[in-house]
Length: 285
View: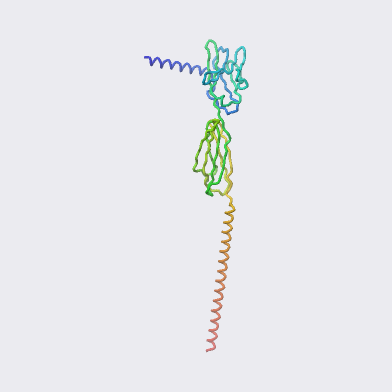
């Protein structure tokens, strides 16, 4: 029986809290880039006799007042938050604040309390999440094989970004892909993806790298892999091959000429002997 009473009490509390949540409209989560401004707003959806709207930050040691808007005294920013916190819309029904140039210490959850009579405090809650995403660094280097190129791309962000390599040509592909993550001292994570690009290298090829982070728009960079060019060693080998081919052709031509001359000389000698034989026969008769 006691268990049923506890369950009933928890159900009543859940319904009550849900009712309070429906009374205030606010974003539960806000994503903002490090160094930019964060906008947090609360709107009272029902008609209440509100005397003051109080903003608090939820800290590990407890809730701390950071500012308020009073029906009679207007807006107030508490010491320690001046220059950091500003009111955008100061009202008893719709109240929003701006947190300037957010840093790591500004991350966390913020509460808006509509102090009304006779209902007491109606609370909304918004959690601020910071993200950081820097432009990827795309690097290209030669492999041991003439038909392969090692392509690597690094991107630093908070939280860890997703790094993807891509190439538009369908006759080219990446193989032996690997990804390494390193956590930096400032809580950012550097993710490096490395792959081997295989395929025909007769023409230049454009490769790209995309860095993604949650719902943040991705950042892309592109580089062109130049067509294969012969090195000085390759040039030397090619010259030798051409010279050998020319020499072979010349030798073959000389041999053919000599063979023809020998053939004509032999034929002329046979004709001369035949003429002598005919003349001797005629003299005999």
